[in-house]
Length: 479
Image (cartoon, helix red, strand yellow):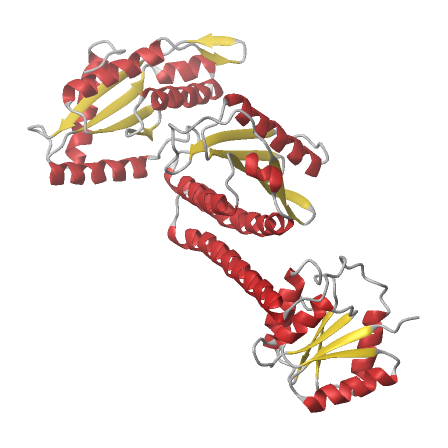
């Protein structure tokens, strides 16, 4: 039976002679390399069962050689022992980071080194891909450069994702930026990230290239199937989904009519699904194993960054949102008025405010109960928000009263907006249990600049006075 061959890489003739003599005495064959580059060449081209790498070597050190051996398909299953002259925490860290299987110091008893070699070789014959024919050193150098370039590229991509975490706060910006970086690894058509909180699922999608609705639906279906597999078909109690636009998306580009390929990268926490990155598109049908492996790393890094942004936004929303209506709370609404007031003063623009109050709300609560009243507050908040422009803001001023902040809006336009809000509420039928309920609102309008308004507080006060006049005039009107 052919004896196992052990590759020793060390630039010290004394160390090589000592280990070679010891291993040969144990019936093992030895292949010698004097630096990291030669070690890679011989590991790739010669039939060896184990590699022992010294850390400090010329041309390429042991950590670099180990990383490259673990990246090369033909040698990644080859056991690697890191041999160093000192036992430091940093050496162990780098040994593990570069993929080394074992770590031992040179000052260890020779018998310990021999015992380790026997242990590794006795673990069974590890399957390795078919060995390539012996090549020239220049071929190995090309492969080394290729591997180094890829590692630099991978480190750069992961570093760019890390930069997003440090530079962006808002979730939407973080998500689109991270997905933009992912698209540099693989040019997907549709991408999504799923976030799992116990029995709640939150999905955010991004269409990177124009795609037909059927393509987007197919991606959604495949993503949900992947999530169901990882969850072992355990259903969710609540599922939310939304779609964000890619930065710089080309709306005039040819629309994709087929998904082409799909890949899902689940993220597990304590053996439970915590998130998933799903990518679809033609390029996903021909992913190389190296790219697929790297995308797994990217998915993990991206999930951490985006999830942190998501949690930060949740915490921030708790401080600025009203818990019942999910509109801005009183304090944040007043801060928005002050900010817009300052902007108008700088740019000689208009700012209008609408005070909105649900008519006879105390009587409504007495007649139908406070739970029905809370349901009306929630529905009214949604109606008002949906009826406003994207640039407008709305908050719960207190009780059944709301405040809408309308930038770049003069009095006449603000009055028309108020009428639109009034009609939206008047025409809406509220449902609570088996009840069908109707309510109305009164609205007061104030605009800056105007003669009585010279401060943010005065703007709110004038809108409140206008609201009072609307109530006095019979309610369900805009003044």
